[in-house]
Length: 383
Image (spheres, rainbow, N blue to C red):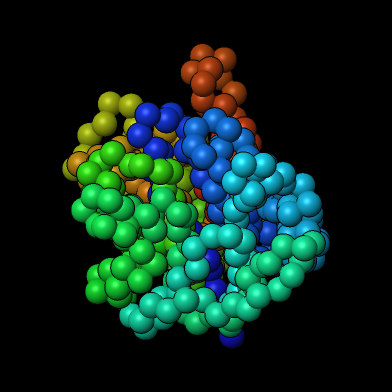
């Protein structure tokens, strides 16, 4: 069975009058699993945010280190105090851990039931009660299928509209009915949470009475992208490197004029400069049959990192410069392989070269950090 990718989408609303959301979401990816933790701190504002952050950090860091789930839950329940007046825990939590094979484990503590969307039907994730550290925990396991979607929500979503548009709030069943009626096969995780939170905000009349969070995790086939930038230091390796690059699955991107010319020569296809879009700061892209995107090299790569870090132009289709196109491609992919040639480009060693345009190694290092912060798996091979 092909490994599946856990695509995660999150959306949150803070309680009216509060700058910080009292819910916290933590996402950690390891070689063995994807871990998602949602915690709802008691109350709202700074205090709730601190308590929820403590909970998610304990859970995610312990699971990342391979600690057994039962021990993680025991540590959290023993660490968190209980409110003296209300006799309830200072924060609740939901944990989801999914392996690449699709094996999912859910843990729920004093929180709404977990939704699972399968083939358009919405049902509760199957769990059973278990006592851990004197606390009653709901825990369950299920082998997920491609296109299954797991959804977490905090209490604020369940209670949306209570005493106003909806006498008893939106409720778990109401959310399930909404998801089922709106479901489309091409929904991605971001669409799910955006739909839920838009509806939630509507029921609150844009004045949320509680912190509200939604997390969706969709299981799908991974999206691959390979980026070839710069020729190898040994010119005799050109053909071997290009063949390896072309054999990779998924989207193919070539960055750098010299590199593009090498690929053009070896695949015997003409390289054309596309002047249909003008940007005064970003060099034009190229067109090469068999390659999905051809851009200039280090300057465009550096600008793409800025686009990713600041979300510049990414959602505006009118921007079609090479850096924006590259950033969109990279953010759409899940697993990225970079083939980076180490041949010296004299232009990059020129002292008059702009100071904010670093050497290729530094630019690719920044790119790796930016993409990993967004849950991407990226490997750089130096040639």
